[in-house]
Length: 299
Image 1 (cartoon, rainbow, N blue to C red):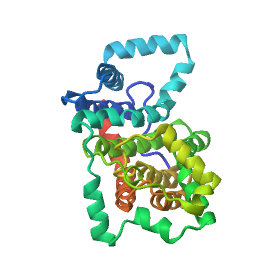
Image 2: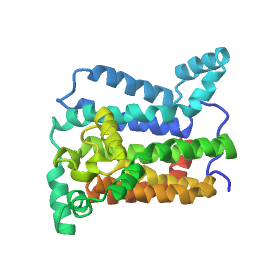
Image 3: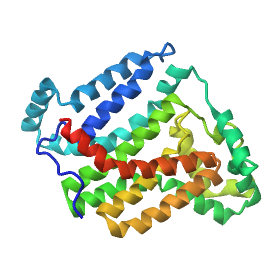
């Protein structure tokens, strides 16, 4: 199956670069609000740099051409940098949503919706009803597979299908991320792990349970729960693999469903977070080829 859009020869100004430039504008607009964090000027400069690089303005193109002539490996970096940028985009979310809302979060809406739809709080009730250590360890392992789901499919696609398919896969992945992150900036939700105590008892002794909690304590971004980007990106990757690495699709689909279940069972996301994330992830995957064509024509 051919990728949706053939890649251009230059490595600067690709559709994914333009997508990130557009997100830099939309996300960076949060810094216009009065509750800007202390280092806001540095964030603003980084967003401005992303806009300049992504639109391939002439000065940026000249600089990049000189760099690639001097350092051929820079052209490789130009292909993989969107993947390397993901942790930064996630880490800046608390600064941006606080700039807009000054620490206000909308968990009350989610809690009311959970109660209305399910008659209880699934992120608390499930683990309490089924405190089974093997089940807990399995679902927490699924939740931790998020990092595998993000990074392994694009690299497999690059190795097996080449640069064009890799660019197509990375574009869909980044489109899913930035759509989720716009919600996290302008409608921040903390998630149940900030509201309720973590599920305890016997399942709290599990090695995978403890590893997941250590990872979250080390690098979780407050206000980034709705829609769940963990779930959304995982569902996007199902479609990406179907297009370019079909044999990998069943594995990613199993991990995605397990991740969604683990997100709720572990008390990391509201059930509505997971459902909304899955829907948005599928929409991103379906829309990606069309959006990519639009941004290609916009060059």
